[in-house]
Image (cartoon, rainbow, N blue to C red; front, side, top):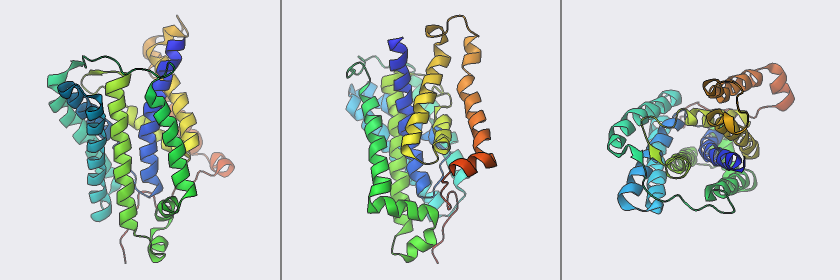
Length: 291
């Protein structure tokens, strides 16, 4: 049972880190539905670099770097060119799905290195995830940079008039967001499940994307949602550890996605929005052209 909870927290950490990246981008008004693609790149490049150099540090840095580059690419299409953010994000996902399959195929199989040591029985990245939540909340709500980020996400025209460089703030956010996503992918392939295979993320990026909407753009709510989904995901993989003989494992594997759909339906109701006031950034997904 202790192993189950430890693995659940490991899974929750990956959801948390990836979703935090998307939350930062969305707070600035940029939607990136290509979270899965950025995670695939981070996971694959991190895995390859670690296996070829025998260095976990270089592997994680590779994952962060490629994530940042993908964030920059998304920013170029979404901010500089003013393109459709959903189309750009889907392009990143499709590119990640196809290109990582090609470059990762020669490395199919286990990482072949000792596991990263735990800290008090938990992955060190669990503590990194908790610290990241606190840091993102503090920056967004207690600093002038956070005020600028939230301003360009709500009303970029007013923010520009106030002296805020909207393009600069949004570029900063999408690059940092991509770095978080790349790191999340690297944590998956180097710590949670250090075995490379074709399309091994299995929708984790899309769950992370949904978590941002579940959290109502609040980092602490996002952490709670990540803990829930991490536990449900682990239960779907190992139901016999908690509920032996209850339903088929294939039915359990649909549970995280079923919950995702149910929560989205509930959040779309007028009652929920009136009661809880989901704070969606007003300019989310809308291109901004400086006048």
